[in-house]
Image 1: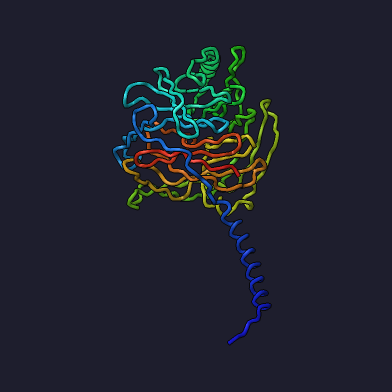
Image 2 (image 1 turned 180 degrees about the vertical axis):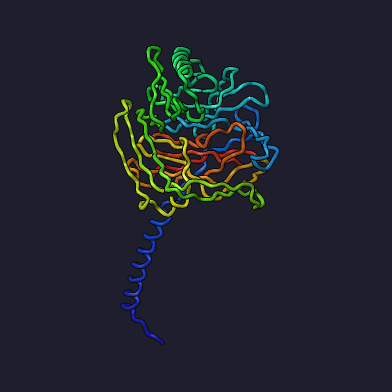
Length: 381
């Protein structure tokens, strides 16, 4: 039998506490990149009433089988994070598209009936002005009154851009602090960003293909460089059977360039492949403006894993599971801020339609359940 004195026990306890402290610091560093501190803001049930969200489940189990369901066309938050906006289709009751505005507790504040022309995209101005886009742009005040002079100026420039050969991609629609509208597309065979001014005296501008900061109109370009290698991506159904396999380019190096409104380079941050964390290296980075910037110049982007799975939640089908990553203004990886599921709705056009950020870097995303959706919040770090 070994007889330990109180002093020896104290020394051993001290050593163990140091080891536990070091181990805890290591685990904290390791898991800090994937720790998700999320909470539910509020929930909205499916239905056709004003305080509900219009959702009709798909009839089949995978997107490839067609007959996709109906759900929100777009989701956005006010730059302050105090209001939440849903753009709905009127496919079930023939009332046309409409916007519903909820407060932080899920109380309906406003319902705005849109014009007869279908709308697919939504952006929110700093003052709560609502911008909608389908074949043309519609502009409404936060109370639902049309802003016809701004709307006319934007559409005149849009029509001129189309006459000049612009081919819009219609999956990127952003408004900055000054009410300038940004869309993406192709002109002269190159991907570019189209800038429209709310002034009737202004002409449209052609910018580089990138992501616009709503705070200042600065344009950031995230460069994803492939090394020639490829990775497999496999999609499984809810029973674990393979429904699709594809090959994706493995992006291993990135750079982040930011330009002001005069297209002067403000910063150019290189991110060599050796700096990638183990978490990043397991994810595939989407291209095509799946990114957003907050008021701190932090960059948020969507990444997808090598394996995706269809999941059934009641009659709702979702593809699980995508990650939203954050990089600070110097290009350093902050971590995986959230993980979300992609619903199989016909109206769902882009990976940016189910999540948004406010000026402080708080992140909000939609979580679709069997009979309701949850608005989730992940607080800024």
